[in-house]
Length: 401
Image 1 (cartoon, rainbow, N blue to C red):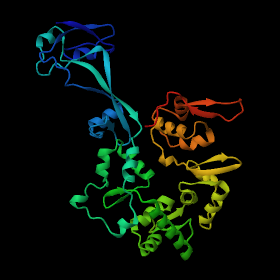
Image 2 (cartoon, one colour; image 1 turned 45 degrees about the vertical axis):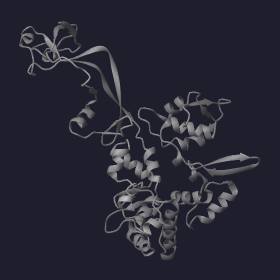
Image 3 (cartoon, one colour; image 1 turned 90 degrees about the horizontal axis):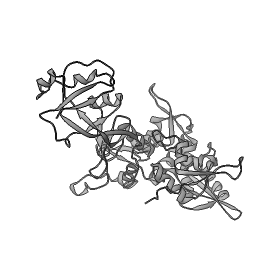
Image 4 (cartoon, rainbow, N blue to C red; image 1 turned 30 degrees about the vertical axis):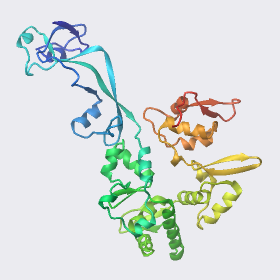
């Protein structure tokens, strides 16, 4: 059954098969016939990709990730893409080159082209945020505590169901690129121990930090120039593993000098002070004055506590004439925008921008700016032009399960 096909490619026609279409001019036509191998069409899926992705795909630099009950994602080294099927409203004919098996020479002589498949649609790749909430949930199932360090665990057959994950396990479970997965582990202050990625129990990490600060006092060490080997040696003498000693420096400090035979670290006041603020508050609500007094007692000499350090970690509320402070950490919130906003507005129906912004700062959504997020998920109201805006939820905001 011959037919007619049109192309919008502006070049010159020659030869049979697919070659006849490559140079077909605007408004030109060419007769078609069905290839002897025409159909079925369900065994074929087309993938649309930009030039950079095409290079990654043909050079084996992409992977498909996801469990059987999840929608698969395609990952490059640094990005994650959702795979969406887009149906075609018009027929899309696939035509092989003239040197392919089964090509009809008569068609080439008549300048016909042979249609071998009819594509019902194509897969489209859309960049999305990595799905890292599962990573947090998995690693928090079994944090590393002092008891496990004192009596190292031996993986026997009946212990293999413990919640421990290697890098290979996480790559197969978490829908994120390698680069995004490493950033997720870093944001959780995770550490690889004996091949397994772990988060350290808060109370155990507190023990290590307090011992580090105690050694700073005993040895007269400056917080701005800690020698890594000296710190590690002192903490090992206090019966902490060397890898956890170095981990403590990474969690609460920043490297200021590397190489030259020694690495130097600086303890960051905000990170240290924030840790002790969490220790004071726990799950309580406290008068701001009482909290600041208790907090100051725990801060090491030489560091200064400032309430601004606690952005994204605590909120305040007025109760009569008192102002109380309580823990509400951005670390506990979902990473997907819809769920994040749902939790925020469930906790507090109306937000001032100065309170809301710290809880949105870490949201990274491809192709969507902060202004776009606010337009999509919030309503903005101002009592007068010079007043601070108040944000509330849009009525279609999905509910948190």
